[in-house]
Image 1: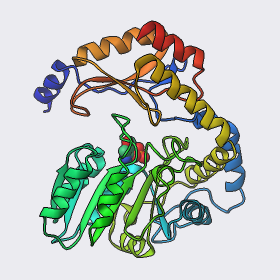
Image 2: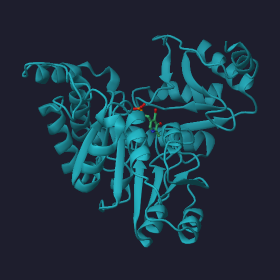
Image 3: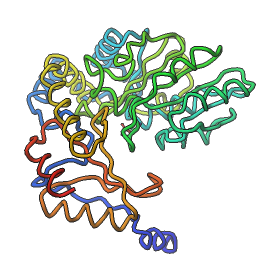
Length: 360
Ligand SMILES: Cc1ncc(COP(=O)(O)O)c(C=O)c1O
């Protein structure tokens, strides 16, 4: 039925497969930036907390009777630390982006996406009745041109804190441009910046010292630096109320898993308690990348572009033989094939040095 399409994918060397992770390899491919996914003490703590309740599963949508004290505690924790009025949790970052980008732009509005915005947002953009445009990646002037030259009831702008595939840090000037225009909403997807940048590892709002405004929306995921699964949306009470009533991927789905939410909560507490050590470890990795490749890695994503998908796959296989697992990212996920290397804090520096100095 789909043979022609599948054959074409195979021929271009971009065929995707699920491969069981070989635990003997050093993991430089996942988004477990701080190594929390193997901190079993956090899981034990989360399980103990869950045992204080009558059930360990949410059982229903959070808008029926699936909303649990564990959700509420985490939402309040997130609001308190990030300085937002209100929060709502989502089953995953994909579902959170679907909620925001499908629900917020209404007829007469304009949705303005960074051209490198995550696939979940691009997909959701296809479902809206508002006008949808993209702007040149991380370019505040191009964003301003659109805002200046368009007519709209509201403009909904979506950007990422740290871009997932390039590791580029959001330009602070984007916030300044949005502030100049009335009737704007700014969505910042912090999937790869929360847990990685900022004094308490809260992401780019904290890094840039930006006090959240009523038109700011922050989305963060729990499946990356926080070593769990799920996502959160932070914004004004008004926006959360609207999402609760209109965002289908929050309403018509079982409430986020309780163990995952509690685990992420424990993960964030751990990060805040150990922030000094974690900052020092990240700095060492950033200095190493700078020394070896002359690149300013502002988060923990380092990319290495290559000429073809075949070359990228060959290099990935060569590195596997030497004990390293790195990401081989190919079109259509990115324009140019590349290795995506995550120098996670629990990969020893001596191994990273061996990888960078000897093999790359
Ligand atoms: C920038 C960005 N946003 C959203 C998502 C989706 O998050 P999740 O994996 O929790 O669905 C991802 C990653 O998968 C991402 O990289």
